[in-house]
Length: 455
Ligand code: TRP
Image (cartoon, rainbow, N blue to C red; front, side, top):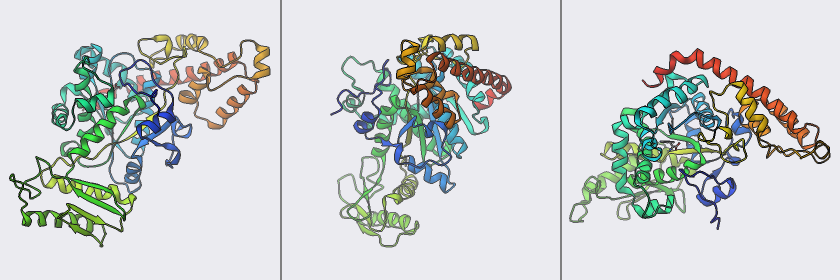
């Protein structure tokens, strides 16, 4: 089933069968989520899938803290595709999330051959300057380098023992010839994603990772790694929820299992009463503790209570000496088509607009871009154009046009043959010019804020 749907985070092509991706990798569709204050990317279905987004939306609703973490690979110029992640980050920031951004200088060094010092320069001049211009708030955003945050590397190393080559093979399609940089990079990325929960970096709270869907393999890996460290698992039961205690090498003494395998009944009782206390402090009363089976049942709890029970038990785990890591949430955006019809890439300047492009070169690229129009005016008037394939229209939808009703009007008129392909391009050129000019002005106005992002 869906054998042709693959995701390779380092690949040069990208599957666009989004519903196939949802099915195959177990993502949740955004269709069933009601997003408060939706951004244009939400309204237009560009953000199409998520994992556990409800956990983060619930924190927002209760005005409880949540964090946002994403990363950038400093390997070239920042282009429109990269700005989509920043749109998502910025939206979460407006909803109250604190933001951390990883500069994947180690990954870029190992997988793309970019030196650490070039990586630094690119991150600052290409990316962070545009983050400031795109409206990220420097007071609520921290940008760091993988190579400089020891704890990230340490966490990646420690989590390595929770996986093995077979799992990486299954997730990424690795084989015997795979360079080990591709094994290390995902572990460091797991460190990136999980470290904001550590006490020195804001403490236990839900973390959401907005990314392009090419990054989902890393999220699958990271979510698995976090769960495997957990001492207490919360799952659906026949009635309500069930907590399962997971005895592991590093926690067996704390959980009352001696090295001989003998159970210390007293200690075990103590552990289970701590679990029951935590759960009852959330307001549940009918709690059934079954130390012999290693379980605690909460028949009156529903799926909606899962994350608050999880959080309570993760904090108990931390007090007892465990890491208490919560599996991250994530959101995924679709990829805008490259201007030439294939994938956008920094190494193919004609495939996209760079955020530093001037209006003249943007105009040139849009004029030459892949069109959804018919080959003659006569045919176009008769058969209409296809906005789904038309780069000019697509770029207005993804990037430049805020007004939904105007967008649906030109969509309709294009299909009806009233707007010609050249006219659509001109509309896009006008909007893109406005957008790029505005961005460049904002870059000048916010240049003095760049240092603050690194503090
Ligand atoms: N691997 C990501 C990329 O190729 C960059 C990255 C590093 C990242 N760490 C991250 C993305 C953490 C999201 C979260 O672009």
